[in-house]
Image (cartoon, rainbow over all chains, first blue to last red; front, side):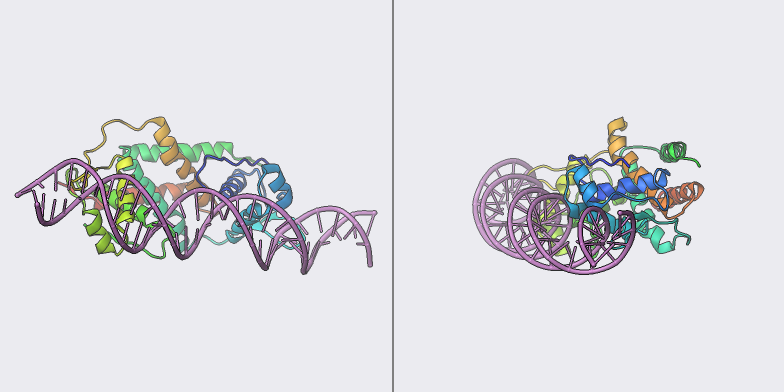
Length: 132
Length: 132
DNA sequence: CATCCGTTATAGTACTTATATAACAGTCGC
DNA sequence: GCGACTGTTATATAAGTACTATAACGGATG
């Protein structure tokens, strides 16, 4: 598993880890049942503190993406079954999407161009993902 | 002009102000040439500090949305002319959009449903915006 | 000049992020 | 059971950001 932290990225290190693990799960690089590196091991690899990795793992567990059990390695959780609730959509997607749409307006990007950008990113994502 | 700050929102107060002003400009509620409230006036209205408002105004100026001149009220800037550079797109839209797409995946929202959500929000936005 | 503006300076509090060191508590293979 | 791995908790420290408070500065306007 390859992870990297960007010093210049204003985002906290632990969230950079969370984001990259989520990406790799979505891309199929990491699959349910796979083990994650130990907190000490990953901390050494990235030259960061044990607790920073631990915090990232806790966030991933809270988001339902990995399983954590004392004494065992962290493990990628099986896919969630239940469809998203309206509340999940609201907080996780709708609000931030509206913010991006506003940003796009101020960059003078047309609605159609915005749709095209979304399509392009969805397509790129699909092509990159690992197929069985 | 109506602004409100949400205590429970984890976003900083000054960014909540920035976000709401951007929304109102995009919606046509605020138009180029319009005056914004004075920093002291808005601070009093929202029961926050003068500097917090000032910081929001600085951010809006840095983003090119308002004009600030010593001794004068803050003013909504004219629309930007230049189309967005690839760099602007990358940092302001592409990266966060990819993150939302990953989130959508983990919420088990299909690509089509994601496109539909985007369309819906674009449509709602259009209907809400003020026409001359 | 008085009064409105944005701006700068300084200081203090609170919270978040990341670090460091240490110890605790399950799991697993020998 | 022992030892070497795992995640977990506790405590302390340092740095950065967000917000507040008070005060003063300097341009614009009647």
